[in-house]
Amino acid sequence: MKIQRERRVLFVRPGPIGNTLAAVPAIRALRKGWPQARITALVERLGMELLRGCPYVDDFIVYEKRGEHNGFIGWLKTVME
Image (cartoon, rainbow, N blue to C red):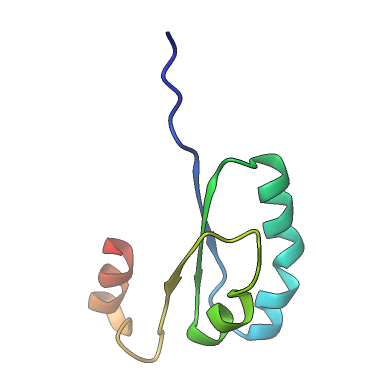
């Protein structure tokens, strides 16, 4: 019997919300290619608000480059999330 692991995808798109919006077709392609995958988007807070209703994203990690995720310690905090 073959055990099937859950496929998980981290989509990283911090930056301007225009770039986040332009990335939606790529997220849709990920969902189409792996319909059962758990897709998590790492985006800035405004990007999360923009994608909140997107049917292709399951979870979010908010990245605050100029806030709590600033510098090396902030980067490590993001990695741990």
